[in-house]
Length: 118
Image (cartoon, rainbow, N blue to C red; front, top):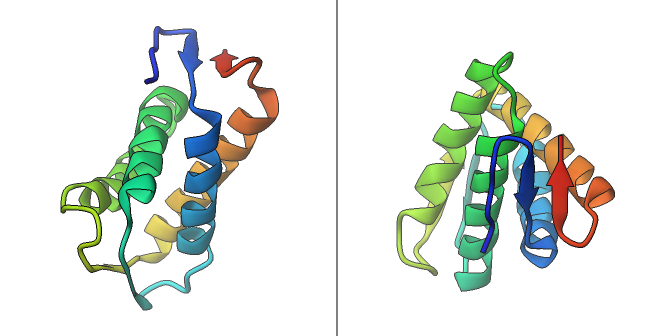
C-alpha cells in the first residue's frame, strides 16, 4: 500500500522493480509497432504501483507527458490478469514511457525505507 501527501510517498520497492522491467520493454518499443503480452497478478500490481508514482512524481510542468503515460498504463490494469493485451504506441507515448522509466529509476535510487520525498 502506498500513501502519499504533496511532498512524500511510500513506495513498494518490489513492485517498482517489477514495473521497471515492464516499462523498460514499453520504452524500448519502436513507435507504431504492435506488441502483445499479458500481465499476471504481480504485473498488474506493479503497474498499479507505477500509476500511483506517475500521479505523484510527474510534475505540473509536464502535463502532456503525464497524460500520455496514464493513457498507456491505465488500460493495462483494467482487464483481469492474464488477459491478452496489445499496445501500439506513438512516438510521444514511447517518450512518456521513457519519462516513467526515469521516474522509477530515481525512485528506486532515492528511496529511504520505501519513502520518497521531494
